[in-house]
Image 1 (cartoon, each protein chain N blue to C red):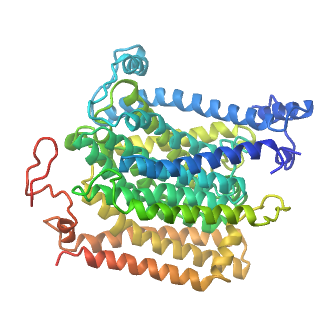
Image 2 (tube, each protein chain N blue to C red; image 1 turned 90 degrees about the horizontal axis):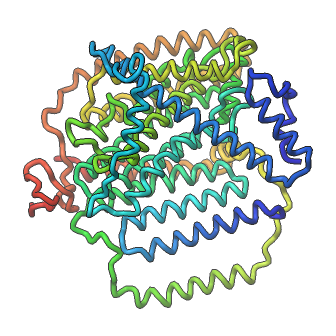
Image 3 (tube, one colour; image 1 turned 90 degrees about the vertical axis):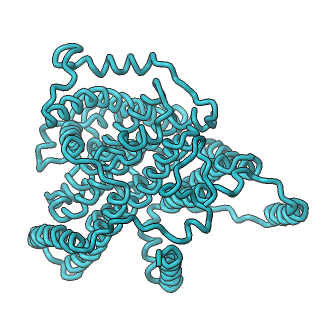
Length: 432
Length: 163
């Protein structure tokens, strides 16, 4: 019997119960199943509904947020922003989309055609696939995997490869520089991301996204209250993963034109832009699910549709990214790497150790959650403040490195040395 | 493996895995070879999913499709004077009979062996079981692997130190 999971658990409400759109889909699937079609049909239908729903939602959200972001950043920077096309400039994204669609797509002569063509398509895949495991509501999840958290991390790591493919295949030194920066940046922050999410998993004892939301619902708390440091680190790791401004060294326009998508134009460039926003929503959705209680809001989800609460939280959190972009200057490459390895990583290791210790104390002594969680929250917030400020002080008082250190071996293995030798046109390297 | 969906999925994934593995050695461009290698790894991850080994599948994607190719890419990119293509070498001649013998051995083993048919259903959840096994039964190999990785990391740092 397929769809046992659908009929297990709390019974489905009527299909028109909009508090959870999963009711309607579940009703439809049950109806198909009862007609006795082939066993794979409900799976295909549920998959199609999920994919089309997520795709439509993400594209329309992106259209709106292109406008919202430009207006908000303009507001932050005391400018006006787009205000000509339509009321308040609301039609600006439509005009932009039309422009992007009609522009010519140029392929450089030396480009690697296959990879150059495939990258803008593939870049959408990780951004969209992540949404499969994220619950929009109690039943509104495409595939609630047992290993959801790990899945999210794994899919994020695929992104690296696609960005590298785009940069390398462009046959442009700025593209390649941007691609290599992305790769170096993402493998640095992947550790940060894993450790930040691990602290949550230690508490919730499950990697299933639904169970993590359920844990926060059961104990009437949000993970952020017991794991503030993890959320802080995850915000940075997420910002790195989606290349947003304080950390967008991969496409730093004042340094390397547009990084890995320098050579892309027209709708190909548009795909990168779209993927960046969708990945941004994905990161915000992960934050909301893992740290901010997902689709629950202390009982309000009984009255207001859970998916509206989820979307509200998601957009609210996405505003933080816009805010960061409007306010913070871009970090230099070495600063960004140093921040991951020297600052975030030690703090997160301490944090994971502490989370494990707390859960151990809690489980071994059988304390009541009501007594123990507030204590943990107070302790962790105090510790987070002390660690963030203290470690910043320690690192700040170290002697600053005026000269970037270069490894000795690099020359011997034949790496390109940029600094003392001007690069000849065409990217050839003079003999060292 | 009785329902048609699994059969179709298995043969698709098998074709993907073996086909892209073949392409890894067949294509002339090293970066293309890396991309095919990733495809092959993703195919293996799909086969793990088919065997309901969800943790292994995701770990496969994370490590083999995400991390190992990055390592290879760094190796390719940091050696600009090395050739970027799958160059011809004189080692091809002795390799041919060696690989042929290996292939013949594997095929004959696969044909001769009386494969037991799995009667169990899918696993419920593998992650916690693997975790417990790693930290109880197999704690010594686990720790040795950790120390080995730590040693490799320290070695890399010492190799590239400036002074």
